[in-house]
Image (cartoon, rainbow, N blue to C red; front, top):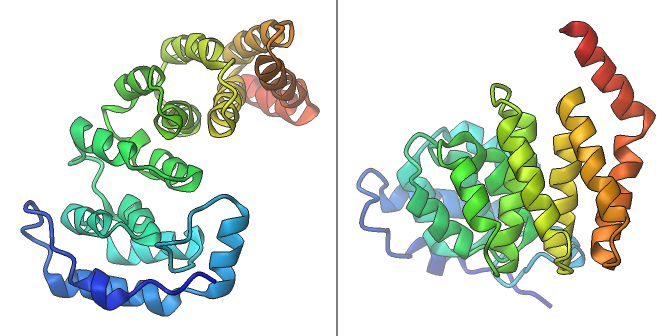
Length: 254
């Protein structure tokens, strides 16, 4: 049975050298909140979804996101929370970190320590895609041999497809090339992110929908089973009525 992490031990974690504006009291208060809001039932649920629970309190992402809004942007606190190593502390760090202060090197350091799909996806959906380093990191991380770093590349593409409203089609067309290159990676957390990226690009607009369909069709013709799965699964959604109606509305709206 997984035991509750020790908040007393976490609260005395040495702050990073650059946490000049973060007091030990702020960190201790935040960690105490995490302990108070954790639950054994939630930790058991996390384990069923392949999320490590050895350093987890058991708090939903929805609850953490709401608490992050109450705390506001605090980049130094984000660093201090990350340094504790606790799962929810690291998730909360993604909600309070300041994307305007986040450097490319910081993204690399945090990405290298991802140990679950949920931490990876939360970082990409709520922080990394809001930085000017996002597209360069997509290209860099897509070449990585590390499972979660490579997942981050395609989770980031999926996030950008939804959140980067001003981006032209060109970077997404380039991302489709990366999708096709990575489509034979059989690792579970990579192939699902590659599929997610392909579907997200295809739902962005009519032009990219056609380009994504072309890629998915080529993948379904591959001998490789992972590539075929990615292609077939993407086609099911992209050819569905819901996506077609959504794209038709976008075309009509101009």
